[in-house]
Image: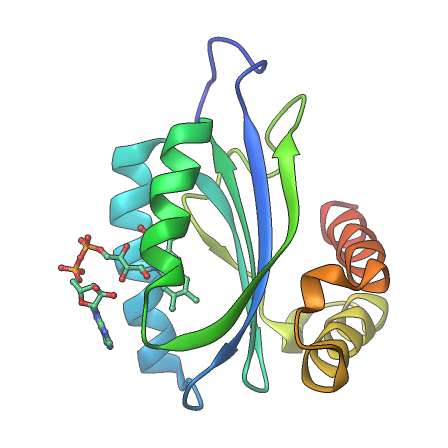
Length: 149
Ligand code: FAD
């Protein structure tokens, strides 16, 4: 659990991306282990979802730490077409207890899973830059509300 002295400086970034190869549980475990080590060091918390070649990740922390982390993630060859969907200040962390939680679609409510599938479809079938698609940010916000619920 990260206890922020002040919540004024918390930034939240959500992106979607396309895996460059199918990710099995060993590959996801490696990503999560490295993420949790680095994020503990950097005071970053968040959530990672992977389904059918689509990653959805939420990062929250101090703006400079988020920017550095996102630059590393964007350059990672394990995925591409990394598109920022939400990016801005928030009043408080949504997942303060998770250095990087993993939300497994097999354990999600049907409503949450449907939203993940829709986000994946938008990513696959959408415009070149899905971050320009207003439907995507609506879906992502709705998914986050469902997961926090
Ligand atoms: P090292 O771990 O020493 O890595 C050095 C270089 O090797 C990096 O460029 C790295 O991208 C590359 N690399 C490492 N393993 C592999 C591999 N199996 N295949 C190909 N290249 C590899 N990092 C975070 O710190 N926080 C996060 O929340 C986070 N989330 C991620 C989510 C996704 C979907 C992915 C794909 C990666 C994520 N990462 C995250 C990892 C991130 O992309 C960097 O790999 C990591 O931050 C680099 O850590 P490091 O500086 O200690 O370098």
